[in-house]
Amino acid sequence: MEKLDTLNKFFVAIQLDREKMCPVIYYSTKGGMSFSKIMSEYPEYMNRIEVDITKNLRMGELLNVATDLGIES
Image (cartoon, rainbow, N blue to C red):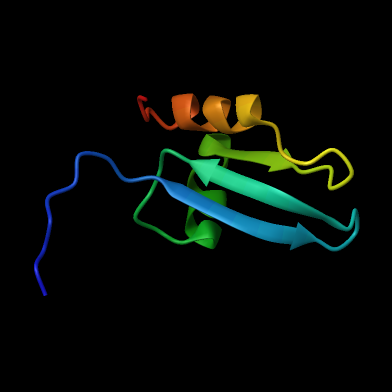
């Protein structure tokens, strides 16, 4: 297996919020570690977007996530 150099690491996950019954996108610039580690050590770096399944996810929201993560188009 070839190891590649990385410029940036970030965290992105989609989970189901069972109380609100909607998908939630979690993202952070603190990558390379687990969700629980980020939440316990760097909670201020974790962002979330609740997805309204009746309206779908808007491209602008995804572009904001990319910008927050430092991903350029």
